[in-house]
Image 1 (cartoon, rainbow, N blue to C red):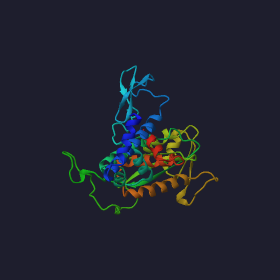
Image 2 (cartoon, rainbow, N blue to C red):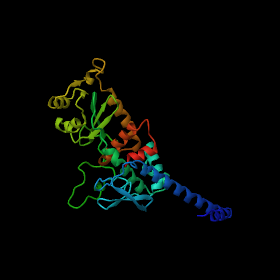
Image 3 (tube, rainbow, N blue to C red):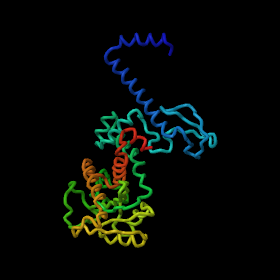
Image 4 (cartoon, rainbow, N blue to C red):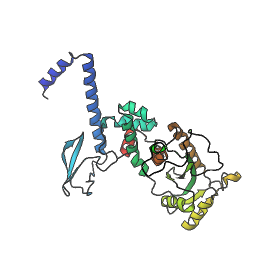
Length: 324
């Protein structure tokens, strides 16, 4: 637009009505938010942008579409954008993503985040699990030094399951009958058909890993625990027999702490207080969701790990880039 045309446009703004001015401001803010979002999404890998299809670095700009630059690979001749192959691919309303990331930072409900972004609750629910897909998959590659491990338990929940009232053909609904949330099971101990065990692993550098367990056998716990441990790891747990078996088979040093007998610290260094403190924060943080469906439990565990990992640099921008 030339200068004279722009001056004419500015002169017409004065004659706009109140609703027209509000509409103009909304359109300008959406365009500005969209441009900022594009710069943020495309700045992460601008130096070494590669083709997500064949991993080639020979790519060129190939126009734009849906608010993002498109690129074309000179080797495989396929086109892509900054979100191709990521959990955020094909999601719409990019101008609202930073607002939604701020809602994830504050861990607000689906309905509140949907209201803040001006989208339907079903859209906010889909966004939540798309944003958390990468966080769920990012487990620590290697935990070193003194590594504490313990289990914590969450109430098994079929929240949102339609099988309670409308089971699919040739299938049966879950065995136990539905009951009010938080009602006692009527049995002592920890029945695994009522509670889900979760393994929490944490080293002294505050690096955390976790896994949802099907049972508490040494084989099941070891299959999740051993890939997280580095070659210099020293395992510190309670006196559960499964960990002794895992340490013996894995040939790693094991220091059990007899918490049931009142022992808290051995030799002034061996304890499981860090992992227990994380368990406490996790339970307190989970309480705001009024029960998490077991099928989505690993996503919420990844959500909490992400917040702990980004604690010093936590921001909506960091959460958005972490979701790619």
